[in-house]
Image (cartoon, rainbow, N blue to C red; front, side, top):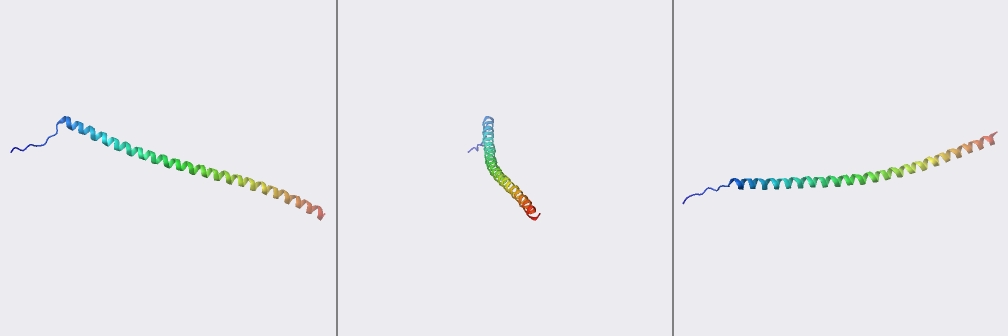
Length: 90
């Protein structure tokens, strides 16, 4: 019995090389796509956090403005009381 060595022709090697390269490229692109989608989701989450923080800051700023207005009103009232007490004293 004669033994036959398995051999792959040159055209088959080129075809296999192209197929392997295409499969590797598809796997690489799918990995890149998954990373992009993941990063996009993270950025969207950060945007939502920023909007929430801006809302909190705006709300805090409004409360601060109201408190400052009340403080000024109290100061004016105290000045009027002082003037009234000065009039009574004199």
